[in-house]
Amino acid sequence: MTTNCINENEQIFIGKTAEFVKNKLCGEATGHDWWHAYRVWQNAKHILKSEESADVLTVELAALLHDISDWKFNNGDDSVGPKIAKDFLMSISVDEKTAQHVSDIIATLSFKGANVKTPMKTIEGEIVQDSDRLDAIGAIGIARSFAYGAFAEQEMYNPEIKPNLHSSYEEYKNAKGTTVNHFYEKLLLLSERMNTQSAKNIAQKRHEFMQNYLEEFFNEWNGKS
Image (tube, rainbow, N blue to C red; front, side, top):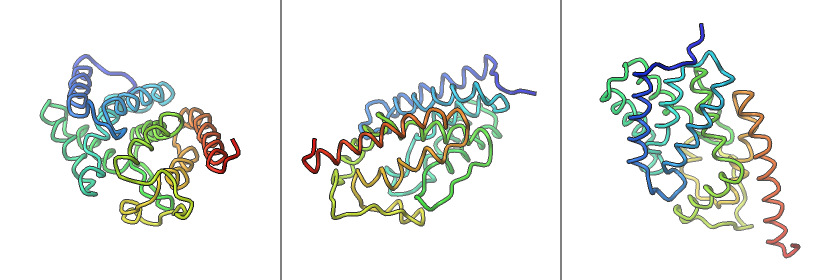
């Protein structure tokens, strides 16, 4: 039986969650703002149309809350976001099973290094992971990368610093690279790591856009364009 529908009470939960996330993240300048959460939410709703077995409430809540307190802004502590999400959902009377599922998704969906596998345990998790990764690639992904790179005081590009395909989560979290290297260390890897066919279809065009951007970047860097 499909669970791809929500009732009036669940719609209220989603509305309250959207308002909570908007109030907390509005105006954030590193690319992890309310509009990032909003786009991931919209991506998730699009993918849900092709994944009828997924629980809509869980997916929408997790999409909205997935970056409520990213580890990058908590000294590498990736337990903060999942806890805030669960505590908030419990405070608005979302059932504990759903709140825990959302928390588990948030705890496990992030990219952890080129050579680190990050499989999701449920279709709901796969959808949210895909939705987040879609916003990390393409034109918006490029813009977000440079916005975060400036915040992190990374060099835009340095030909003397080579990309590093990290072998552990700790290595990835502690890396001090360049923004352009981030394309090779993460962004260009994501199209092949999408879970759902819907996300794979969208990712291909965005992947090609990034490749074309980098070609132009290096042409200009080398005075060829």
